[in-house]
Length: 253
Ligand SMILES: [Zn+2]
Image (cartoon, rainbow, N blue to C red; front, side):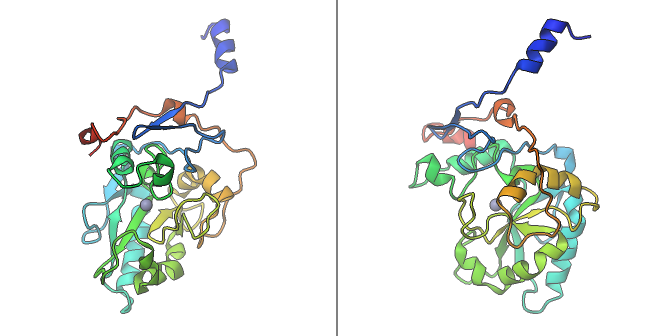
């Protein structure tokens, strides 16, 4: 049994927002745990990840196991539509915290962390870390680079807007979102078609704050509004990840 003094200390202890190191910059999380606008997310155990359906990934795509049935149905539906058949691919799916650090810190002209955070989440703060997010790509690209706004004008992206919520996917970062993250017509997260679907309750819990405060558009119906947001100590307890600078960028590849 825990000694009374230790128990009292444990009960009185409050996580203190730690200053995060970001590619040589620093940033302090807000009281709700967000770092430069992005909510904290823990990593996904490898045993909870499975490969996306064959032929879907451009460069490998691991997803949460419980997302697979809906993703399989979504891909089949797209394949059944002559307007978009064969066009939807996965650009990026699960990214672990170390990998996300590399993506966030990769050399770019806009080296300032706040600027980077408009289009990429800092490590430990990406929906991709949860295994529930997919960045879609369109093939043939027809001159539109991956992960650019021009994707929104393609038949495949319009098909996603019209159909993805029926398969449990919603657009995390719509245009002019209050989170001040760049409009990302390619980035969809899975929350299940209903809370009763296997795995959906967990996904909805993980994304509860984001869904309630910065709603997806289009969104899956039945958004749960939590009256008391859970405390997110993940910034303090996040696994260590390398501080990526131009000098040690190899550590972040
Ligand atoms: Zn994404």
